[in-house]
Image 1 (tube, one colour):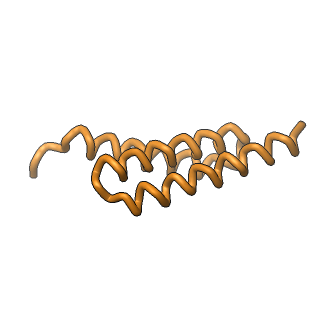
Image 2: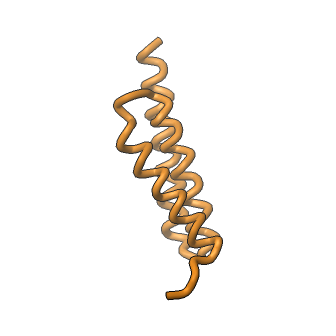
Amino acid sequence: MAAMDRLTLFGLCAVSLMLACYALEDRSHWFVLAFAGSCALGSVYGFLQGAWPFGVVEAMWSLVAVRRWWFSKAARA
């Protein structure tokens, strides 16, 4: 098995962070914001890999998550 290149490692970290933040969203609204950031990293990975549809969809998920964070933050205030 070939060694994992840096781009693949970056993608693995981005998606793993996305999964962890998604699982922890109920604990704090900050995990929703972290999920948005990890989706943005996933989007960057998609574009760098050449899978632009993945990059576009992850960018949209990031915007949806930022919106969810904004409203959850406002509801807690």
